[in-house]
Length: 104
Length: 363
Image (cartoon, rainbow over all chains, first blue to last red; front, side):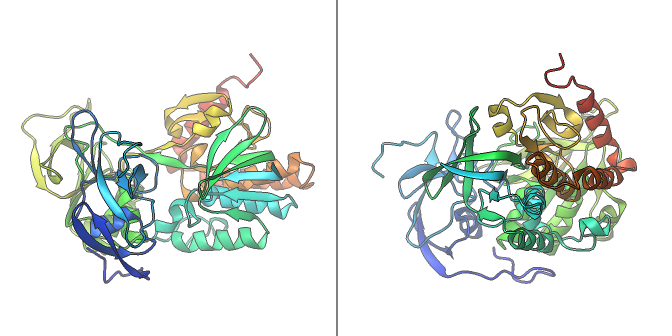
């Protein structure tokens, strides 16, 4: 859900790009945080907690709290609230701590 | 290894002001910030600031961020965005990460202006996606142009809670209610009036009992609190909401100061653990200064002034800024004025406690 008419702000958007979330193909703007593009697509569950397997979303949006860790292009523990979107990225929900040694 | 006179960590209102002040005194200054856009949390502040001309009253936060950056650039501060400070070592070396490369830097003076992070609140299901810090929602809406959901409940009627509620409306989100545990509204009357005029109820002496939902937030149960801040059974109300914003205060980001061995004190009025510092913002470790929310959670206007003070003091300690005895006093008076009146009571109490703690090395 993008904000279209705002009384004070306007939002110059970058280039529209395609990326992959789980098995879906999504669109977002290049350079915006991955979490913003996911939110626009209505995706708010970003990972699963380690012990109780509970769904987690983002909390702080500025890279402080680590609530939004996802697996991006095979790399776990990426803070998607600050990681910039690029064309062709593969974004997956992270389960628990994520596996540093998984090939993807 | 790179060297510089002054390194400033953090490019928000405090850090930018510190860097500009030190550079204007003739110091060689490097400023690092972990994000790509400077200004800290000012970049999402669409409201106009209060206060006096020195603190840019009447100007929107986003505009202040731009002005502060321009001033730093004009003063020839070397700005390194997307650069995270990783550690402060006992030999004075600071490690930084930029583009996945490690940079080692040895500054003669250091100003830590790392800001603060949002606090959370304990209630059932408080980890459901859809529950955010109020500042996070502000970032998503005002910086990235994405609407966080359809219907929100705000916890906290301090200035942040009130302002973000208004901004949610501006972004086309319905605000069901503002819930405040205290018996009265903490924020300025002007902000509260704007919310009330929109027909949004402000429920004082109310808190969150529980959040509900499957995979994401669907609603919250609020209940009234008694004079002991305990929930009163039978007063529960269920509000449908897919957004719950927590505006329940901030706590200083002080990891680097702990690592540097600064004497730390727990002062709830200042936001939690803060470093001990003197009247010129210098911590117990000589040469390390602190400014802004990392020193005490306050307004952006005070952050600019504590930053300026730290910048001038650090330059003075390097033999620059000969006018510091006069200039420093003027800046300290500016701070006293900002903290005057009933809104500054908490910060005055906190700073009083901090100053009363034994001075490092005086034990």
